[in-house]
Length: 207
Image 1 (cartoon, rainbow, N blue to C red):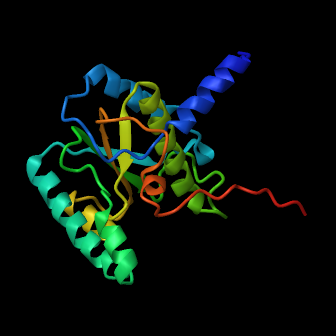
Image 2: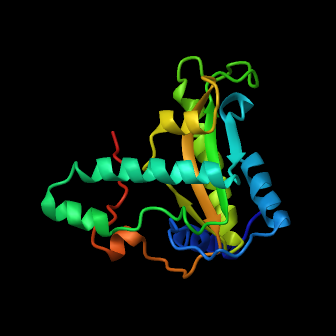
């Protein structure tokens, strides 16, 4: 398969408009569309073809409520780490779409999967976590191409998430994703709009 300059431009657009969404509509996402997102994760590269990502689709209102409380606890703790002015700015940020997002996925890393027979990870076990990150990114780009929004909730205690979702020690919490139709679309990241942090150019150092 040989791609065109137009294909490259479309990919660039999808990457540019891949925003971390916090404001969702509550409208349901069709199951066939979610299946395409699941299949997108199958295309992700993984060390030794270990495919260490494990996904729980959280639908139970009780579990969602516990996760919401866990977020609030972690968010309050995080806020205390800032000085007064920065703390006020932090408090003003909308940092999760937990209340409205119709689809919520908890992503875990299998820390010693049988698949892959340890190829490529004996000297660098962290490649398992890198593989999971790439699977998440594959899903994220596929969602944006379908006009869906994705938001990652990083203000959660990993150990508490593992307890809430009753997973064993062979799984490590990696990410919590909120997925749904965005209330609005914007190519400007939230943290840019609020003045929290601008992008720095990625430099490639030559040695």
